[in-house]
Structures are given as C-alpha cells and as structure tokens.
Length: 141
Ligand code: HEM
Image (cartoon, rainbow, N blue to C red; front, side, top):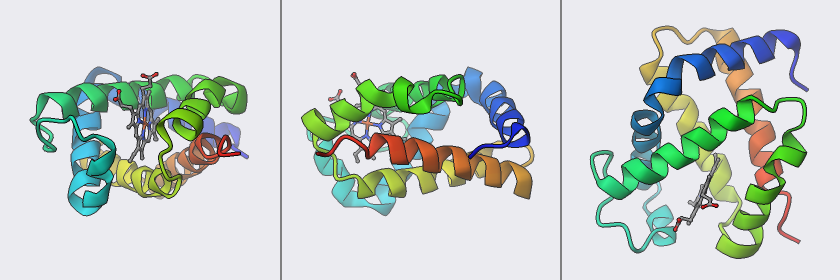
C-alpha cells in the first residue's frame, strides 16, 4: 500500500519526467532490448531496437505516458489499468515475467536521469511499479 509520502514522491518524479516522456521511454525500451534480447520478438516489425530508432521512440513515449497516467490514479489503479491489462493478457499475450524485467529497467533508467534519486524516492517508485506490474499481470485467465 502506498503511503501519502510515497504518493508525493511518485507525483514529484512524474512531474520531473513529464516533458521527457519520449526520451525516458526510448532509453528504457532500448535497455530492455539490450539486456533481454528475447523481448524483441514481441516487436518484430520494428526497424531497429536502439533509443534513436523511430519505433523505439514512439513506443517508448506511449509506455511512459501510460505510466505517467497511472501515477495520476494511485487510488484506483486496478480499475484504471484494467483495459491495458486485458490488452496485454488477452490480445498481446506478453509473458508477464517481462513486466518485472521492464519495471526494474524503468527504475534504473530513472536513476540515471533524475538529478537525485534518494532511497525514499527509490522505494516509492519501486512500490508503485510493483503495483502496476501486479495489475498488468492480472488478466491472464
Ligand atoms: C502496447 C504499456 C510492458 C509489449 C502497449 C501500449 C501501452 C503499453 C500503453 C499501447 C496500447 C494500445 O495501443 O492500446 C505498457 C506498460 C508496460 C508495458 C505501462 C509496463 C510498465 C510491456 C512489455 C512488453 C510489452 C514488458 C513485452 C516485452 C507490448 C506490445 C504492444 C504493447 C507488443 C503492442 C505494440 C504495437 O504493435 O502497437 N503497451 N506496456 N509491453 N506492449 Fe506494453
């Protein structure tokens, strides 16, 4: 459960990266593809898998904007994420383990880009992404 202090941390980070969603998203996705090359198979039509490649930028922006939107719904995450969870679980059929891999990578990406990344910020982001991953993994049956 997110405390009020956690929520403040999450909103603060969201505010900081809002203007850089595409860059943050492209960086995170490129790291996912580099560290876990098998994840590229979900995106067979991409012309490249680096942060500078157009499809990585476009999809990275989509993903991070979805994370930012979720940060505005901390009190109703299950309902807010239901549609996206159903899409990943029933249509895209992404192995849910990949959500865990990706959330760890988002944490690292934020840590390399934010001016400071205190233990309290780290913990708040971790709890938020854990909840997000839990919800995204909830529609596989
Ligand atoms: C599509 C968010 C993790 C594979 C999408 C879309 C969003 C999104 C917003 C677009 C949905 C739409 O068009 O209606 C997220 C979030 C994630 C996440 C917030 C976790 C933080 C992953 C992971 C994979 C994945 C780990 C696979 C390794 C896909 C695929 C699509 C997609 C294949 C469809 C791409 C296309 O052809 O347009 N995701 N995603 N997602 N996602 Fe995710």
